[in-house]
Image (cartoon, rainbow, N blue to C red):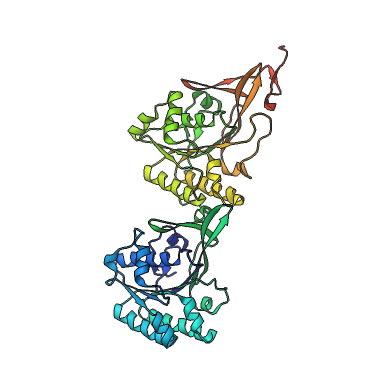
Length: 480
């Protein structure tokens, strides 16, 4: 099967949606309300293409001056004024459209395409062209003639419009692809979205995807479950074990955690989930480095907590064995976090990963119904990259037997489950750890007391002479 020649956009994530970029020589509509990012997308592509040696013609059918456009674009890192007038030519066709009509606009742009030897044509203001057309036939004719001239010159065309055109509109039927940008409010949060509504003769990642405008321009974050519906690499078929960082736990689960497995520790606030995770990271080495991907505690607070457990995180960091990465839960996009995490794993060669916590990551989701698919894809991809994951999730309620699962189908997402709870026993508040699941290995199902002190963590078989332990308020039974 012959591969289509692609035109890279230079926009993070967009080329992934397009399975490699725009089809070279094809035509696309970029549509969305004013302020949705259409002009930034098109100019970002234009400057990137010019930087790669291509030639770009930007024709505007709007009354806005080019100087005003350059003023706004100059705040973005991709803007390079040295390209303007050389590889990038800006032409205003507004007066021609107003005074002479669509036919003369076509003639003007045809001359400029030939003169500039353009390989990309950007037409901003398709809505104005539509308003000048006497009929739908005239609109089709305008687009068809521009497409014909551009195709003859080997030129890719982007039409920008602020109108949300229907799928059956004459413009949609004429072009090869339609990309829609939008912005929605979720509570008080405003989230930008991008959707590929049409991609003729080319594969693409369908559905809605999140994006944002940064100092670098437009950044697109493909939905992780669509990007990694299948892991990008083959899983390691060899079943080997690595230390969990807690000797007593290793003795209860057959020697250690399976390499490239996912362990979830669930429990209320303060019960010891992060302490377990830090003990797991304490076993990192420069040859098998680890990453603390945290949400609720800054790196400084994490170092202090680890020091209280007898773990010298600073020394691990200095040796290259451990990396700390923190992000607040006040803002952020779910897929952006997933992609950032995978990038850090690749850049640092991470083999041990603590996500503290999955709940913090989940708080950034605007649609909680996709959490199962998101976490399933993320964990599967981490396994494929040879990463052993230890994750935490806070559950409500300090006491009681009820456990609220953080996501449906939890067993399909994680390999091992540890449940931590507080228990009142003999006028003392104790920490209870129970092993709920260890995939592909036997384990001791005894109820365990988790003891935290300045020397680290310890697990003790406890509550042998107690009943109703899982209720949170245990009572001592009569000894036989």
